Image (tube, rainbow, N blue to C red; front, side, top):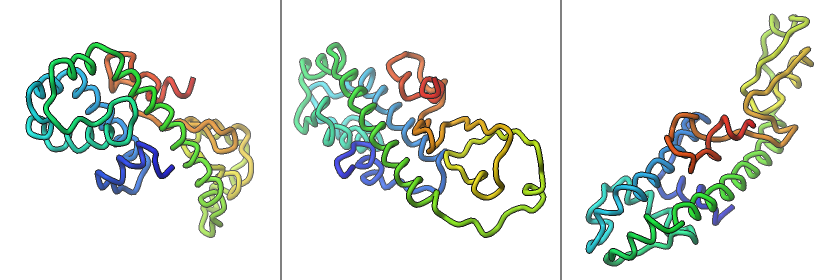
Length: 194
């Protein structure tokens, strides 16, 4: 995990947040920057140094990805027309996305282990007596853990919308309408749930 592109990106961009939604939004932010760079911003780089022609936020993100990925190595010099054509017309972006998919799967696996070993073992001392007294309930759960069962007991039906630790099927991704093309479909929650 110390070489994981996503982990490197979060560390190098100074990501800090309290919740999962922000975490997924940051994944989406990087993917949007990759798409913008590979389809539009790269053209600005011809005959120039990338850091001087694209905005600093994009540069920081793309530099991080290029530094830690094999698919799109970092070019610190001038970009030639052939460098740009390789990124735009060859399968460099597709290779990069394939690498980011593998890295995301590794990140999800690491988060699964962390939640199973640490979050799942936290003893809950505060709970709602009213909820505990409910009988015959069906639960729609957006939590990956089995906290409800460990605190309140079983529900008649417990549907975990974004997957569960028990089934090793955590859904961690971007919104379903984040991209207009199918290059990013693997990263979308709807696709991951399927």
